[in-house]
Amino acid sequence: MTGRPSLTRIRPISRTRWGSVRRLTVRQGRAAADQFLTDGVQAVREALHYGAAELLLVAEPLLQTLERGQPATAASAQLAALAQLLVVAEQFEIPVVSLTEAEDRQLTDAVSPQGIFAVCPKRHSTLAALSDVKLAVICVEVRDPGNAGTIIRAADAFGAAAVVFTRGSVEVENAKTVRASVGSLFHLPVVQQVTFDETVAWARDNGMRVLAADAAGSALTEVPLDAPTAWVFGNEAWGFPPDVLTMVDQVVAVPMYGKAESLNVATAAAICLYATATAQRR
Image 1 (tube, rainbow, N blue to C red):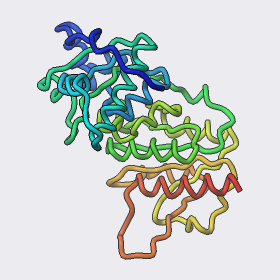
Image 2 (image 1 turned 45 degrees about the vertical axis):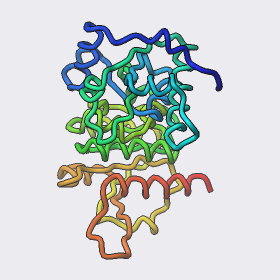
Image 3 (image 1 turned 30 degrees about the vertical axis):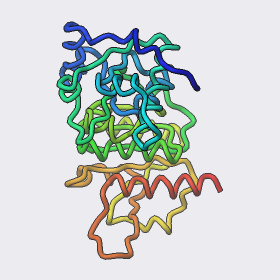
Image 4 (image 1 turned 180 degrees about the vertical axis):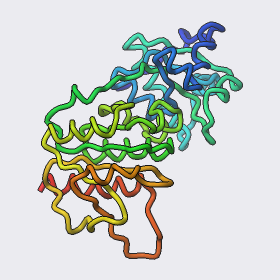
């Protein structure tokens, strides 16, 4: 898509709208508004393309630089991407407002903020709406937002049909989780606040084996992976609650050939999902 955005229609954010957007930086505010924030060019682009953006917010310095034009540098590619986002927003009649530098900093804790945000409605996916699933992810009390977002991204990359976060897990709309998913949050259903029992029942009703990733299990390389599968991943610090491993069909471990003691849960998830997706496509 080509073209130049009309920057003259972009106005500074109003006091009322700023207050409602600012509240989305805390969990209670997101719950009350049933909305959340996503930031960064790639994530905002996915929100736009998947119909999940209700409002765009752009830092004034970016808009001023865009208006002046830039020479062909690495930074100009980012500006070109921003310009196309604004064109898409204009075509779909999505409002765009500008932020001061101070307002921009208040909306993110990112080390290198990109200065572009989208307000998105929360998605309320349910287990009942999911059927004919060949590959799914179940996160049991996964509480690190970065890991949660990376697991969503890995599930998206390897063709999983859904990601489920059981009760006690991190809020998916947490800013760090949204950022770590890099837009994948908009690509597949993500179910929250369900029990492990009902999730296992759903998986079996859909003909899936339930496999738990744990260091005490059988080697991943020795387990057939071509059947429909729901992978279960546990808490980063203490693994699984005592009853979880008794409810799964098999416990599986990722073989390690070096000196590392263990794997990050998101890394283990990516390996298990890649292996399963590859086996299912043979």
